[in-house]
Amino acid sequence: MLQLDSEAAVQDALYLILRPWVPDLVPETPTEKTGNRFTVRDFMSGALRLVIEAKFVRDKQHGKNISKELHDDIEVYRHNHYCDTILFFIYDPDSNIPDERELRRTIEQSRVYDGLPLTCILIVKP
Image (tube, rainbow, N blue to C red; front, top):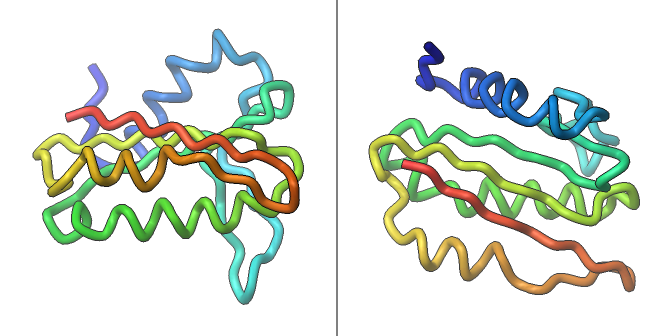
C-alpha cells in the first residue's frame, strides 16, 4: 500500500499508474536554466508533448501559496517548445487549498505564448 505523505510519494504513485499507458514517460528531467535557476519537471512525454507536475499540499500556508507555485511552473514551461500541455496533479489530503474554484479559474485559462498555445489542466484530489 502506498502512503501518500510527501510530494515524492505522490510522484511515485503517478509514475506507477501512468507508465503503462504512456510508454515514453520520463521522470525528473532538469529543464533549461530560466533566469538564475534550474527547475525540475516531474514527468514529461515527448510523444504527447506533455509535462506533468505533481504537488503535495503540506499545510494551510502551502495551500494558500500553491497558485504562485503553479504560475511559476507555467512561466518556465511556456518557453519550452516541446510542451503543449501542462497537467498539474495536486494531492491535497487535508483540503488546505482555500478556494479550489478560483485556483482552477486562474490556471485553466487559454494561453498563447509566441503564437503557440499552452493548455493547463488542473486535477485536485483530496
